[in-house]
Image (tube, rainbow, N blue to C red; front, side, top):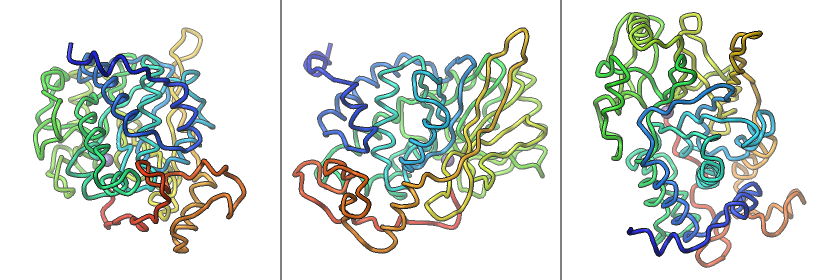
Length: 359
Ligand SMILES: [Mn+2]
């Protein structure tokens, strides 16, 4: 075993959870142990995870940590509620590290209750350009290896999930290279997301109601797919519906082709400025008395998300939250200090690098 030394170090998941729910960062050493442990767990998983209802689906979060806390408030905390997260945990928002750290610890603490699949942002190349790399360097220091630890871990995330054998769940969508789920099972997923091919398409593709078949996506990766492609995939694989994330929805969700394809979007007021709603999808159990139920639970941005953004926009830089609101203890600096030195830091990423096309 190559893991003996690291396994000997005790990892207190409850203590990690306590810190993370308060918005505090974990040390680099702890993150290294967490990533190591989770890799051990995920390496045993198939590319497609089989899950059962009742379960709640969560779409893109993009570092909007306070909105993730809001999701648990309205949807229930693990392990009381089962969760399938559909990817895009990092980039764009100001708290990608807090977000992914909390999800990792929840997965380790409740492995059968929490499932994380991979989004197109769980990638070295994308996180270098859309905020996560910069956030790691800002909060842990330029010399830190946390970005490498997290992005190496992302290679282990499964690519898709099925629920009760009837719902197919994926971050993006379908691929001309994936006729049946057997084509997903044979992918070697333990790598950076490639530029093309089935693995890229699963995390990059989008439905398009104007289409019948496939068309190259204007995103520069993946495809847009139409109703014929959907019907064929559902029929061949015995699925009834597809649930996916990946696209901003003003109402928090979008239903295509009378529910054959559905988008769940879980980042309210995306990038702190889009003004959109968000949702989680609550799937209730299929019982004899009651058929399986689907409910999009729609919510708005958390007041904490709004408050923080106002402070950042006003150029307040390094903020002592205690002074401004009285809401937080001195310990709760929400990442405004260098973890290595403990020194307070000015944030260098005052504004995320927005582009017109939301990925
Ligand atoms: Mn995406």
